[in-house]
Amino acid sequence: MIELQQIQKSFKVAKRSAGFWQTSKALFHKEYTQIDALSDISFNIQPGEMVGYIGPNGAGKSSTIKIMSGVLVPDSGSCVINGLTPWKNRKEHVRNIGVVFGQRSQLWWEVPVIDSFELLRDIYDIDQAAYRQKLNELSERLNIGDLLTTPTRQLSLGQRMRCEIAASLLHSPSLLFLDEPTIGLDAHSKIAVRQFIQELNHEHQTTIILTTHDMQDIEALTERILLIGKGRILLDGSLKELKQRQQDHTQIVIEALHGNFQAQAGLTLLEQTAGHYLVEVDTQLLSLAKAIESLAKQLEVTSLTVKQPTAEELVVNLYQEFEI
Ligand SMILES: Nc1ncnc2c1ncn2[C@@H]1O[C@H](COP(=O)(O)OP(=O)(O)OP(=O)(O)O)[C@@H](O)[C@H]1O
Image 1 (spheres, rainbow, N blue to C red):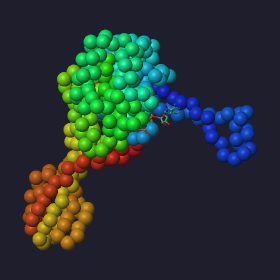
Image 2 (cartoon, protein in one colour):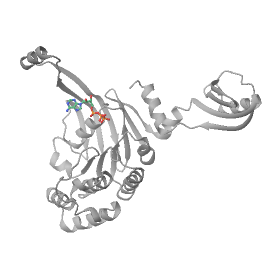
Image 3 (cartoon, rainbow, N blue to C red):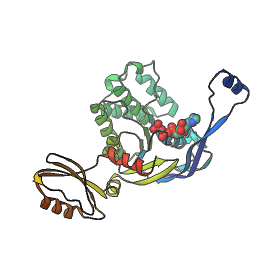
Image 4 (cartoon, rainbow, N blue to C red):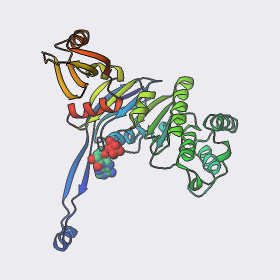
């Protein structure tokens, strides 16, 4: 359904000069630098998939989303979505997609939300009956019924985000791009938005591509992760695979009454304070079971916890591993 092959995109930006003479010179001789935002992006996404597109700031996530939604044209490579090339078949393509940019609004600021919705109905030429039905469904699911007559500028961030999501879905797209949909939301609103996204994917089989720095979004929503860095896809797999990949070095926290820790191949003491030990096991050299058995012999253990890295730590480790 979505197929990107060797997408490349560079931006030419004018060099900024410091000082009066340099600035005056730059008026006549502009110098440019090239930013290679995307060097070689290739991936496939099947209908109904929910994919997390992650990577550090400036990695190229938004640029990829812009290319897939047809607002940015790549320098080379191909992108085919539902048989269409987004930037060549824009009119047809936008009927199949919904886009939510957490940092930008698609609602008219000064007018009541419902007026923006009606305008979108006209733009997408949605049949009246279908529009009414969709509006009722979205109002109920996103709990925005009471907000429809309020001008967008008077909404809180959480209220606005629910209205933005509704706006992107009025024309029932089969593909939804969500760029930082929970940014700045409180814990309660985040959970409500995540729950809605999950239901949308399950009930309507909407394909969802989610860009976020919030690893709880990823953990709650996506089976599959695409990691972008240095303009390339560095990893394509599930969060589970990612965890397994990083289990070579497992940490164990031990509280012990007394004893004497003895280092051995595969077992390293990272921290020790009165009765508290933090040990790392290299599971390539020593199995976790053998490590625990050995520790139980050396120390009079009162509690032992195998530390599971959080999704956040996993990603930090990945960024370090790929030096991005
Ligand atoms: N219109 C533009 N003109 C010049 N450079 C651009 C433009 N858009 C993006 N870039 C550059 O391309 C690179 C990728 O930017 P992009 O916004 O796609 O990254 P991102 O992964 O979405 O980052 P973030 O997580 O910070 O939103 C960055 O170096 C950025 O400065």
